[in-house]
Image (tube, one colour):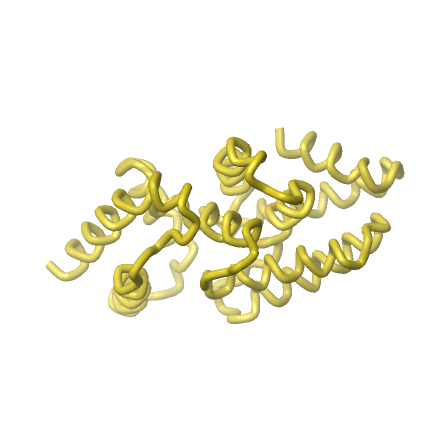
Length: 206
């Protein structure tokens, strides 16, 4: 499904099917790297399913989609520059499609915004940021699977180090006035996200 979506998206800007095929194979290869367990093609599919019902709320759907495909294209758990490197990678690839520079800059801005998930005054960016965190407000079973997949991605950490870092991350979310800043996401996910995070924190503290 995601391959077809990617191809049709790219064909809006460039009819070179060989180029588009090569770009997709690169996306597919990156998101299928063996060290990935959560940040995979399944994550892109899930994110798309969250965003699609909100299409009418989004000003530039194409930019959202390009951001979706490239926001985690570079993922190295040892690096603190994944977002920056993903943005640079996206810029290089999107230039090949002859996309307008202003649109590429918007994709770059949105990818970089995922580094800290701070409030954005741009509606499309805020929607994407909240969608990227939607897993936190998912039902208990899906949230548990997510936590197990993230743990596998950080398998190089021993339990004590991972626990410490995970507790810090959870507390940073719970200390926010709101986890989701767009009203549509706040209404749908906020309560469950706080329940999930609180339960996970409790498990680590006991």
